[in-house]
Image (tube, rainbow, N blue to C red; front, side):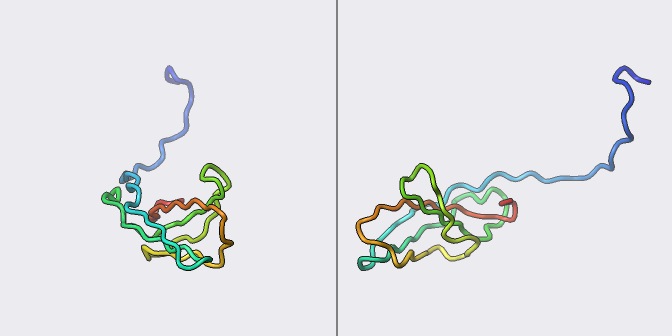
Length: 103
C-alpha cells in the first residue's frame, strides 16, 4: 500500500486533441421584408477554433435577455427568413456557429 491508499489499475492511455470554441459570427444584419418577415444574414466566424463549422443556430427572444427559443439549427446557410411575424412586436436574434463539438 502506497501513501495514497489503494487504487485501481490505470486506464489505457489515449491521445486527445483540444479545440478552441469558434469565434462569434460577424456582420449580422436584419432587414424587414414587408410587414411580416425579417431576413437575417451574417458571415462565418473569422476563427473556427480548429474545427469545421457544420452550420448555424438561430435563436429568438422577446426581450434579448431570456426566453431564447431555437428557430433553426445545423443549417449551412448564412441567411434566414423569419416569416409570419406579428407587426409591431420586437424580437431579438442571435446566431452562433455550430461544429461537431456542439454537444
